Image: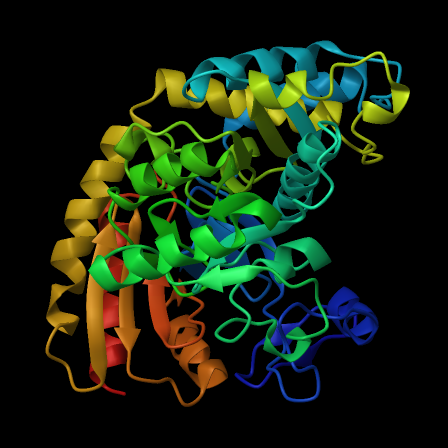
Length: 429
């Protein structure tokens, strides 16, 4: 087998050399980006490269692998389902894994969020939530409520609707500003000034708004920005006052990442629609869920065929993905995941503390199993990422932040290796 070497002298397998010229990588300027690392296999909290190097994964594959990699319980559940039925269309047919998962999710999320619509990705789950909110009004013969109130620093996906309610300037979609549907994007109401601006926006525009969308507690891909739980009751009160649909995007925060199973629990607030994905299947297969309260579903329950929700992803409720999700929920029930998150929070606070006071560090913050070191700026992201690989860890800074969001099952020594790598690299910038 032909093997070439990468820029660190490591051998590249033949499949890599043959296939790389035919892929388009995410979030990458292909002309300038460093070649991706060839992965042979994974185990626990580690990524094993084809040259034999092992990296402690600090971000759990974009926050999905909450139980670590290759968990035997999830693997066995998927293997059993594969032998029975890998997939069947969800139009006119149903299967045990999907209906069982829907029932379990409805029991886990707060309040009367009882109707589950499945899809394959978080971005699509957000699109479905927005579509539900707009059609909720259309089905009530209100056609002018088509816009959303969203927040600066927010990120809701890379599809058109998700981009349109994400931060138009600070994120990855700035070049599309002015080309997307226009919504009202303002500061989160965290203080007196921003609360006043929030109130003014509602007073002026409520009659054209279908709803409000927010990432509760943590704005993830927009910069790992934290906000207090007190913001959420303020949004709920405003949604009630103006009859708006309140959507909580818990793609990132759901399933324990912030310390409670769902971020909305920290404030005792029930949204009208909640979106889930990322850790839903324990990082094994693509699956997402948009879960609505009874009052939302009731607006679609009609003798008019046109009042039905016109949406149906081809692979929605995929049997293999649902089996993985059910197995992941088993692990949340059987194993002490939230206690592990609390322990990770303590370790992150302790391990990242030396970064405070380092020149160029703007802030260090921790919430649940999320640790963030925000810098004044990062000049060369690619070089910084390579430095972490050289330390034996996989950490992927973006924007001006270096962050950790490891698997909840990570060992103390592995977590210490991650925080030590962050403090070492940041201390020598």
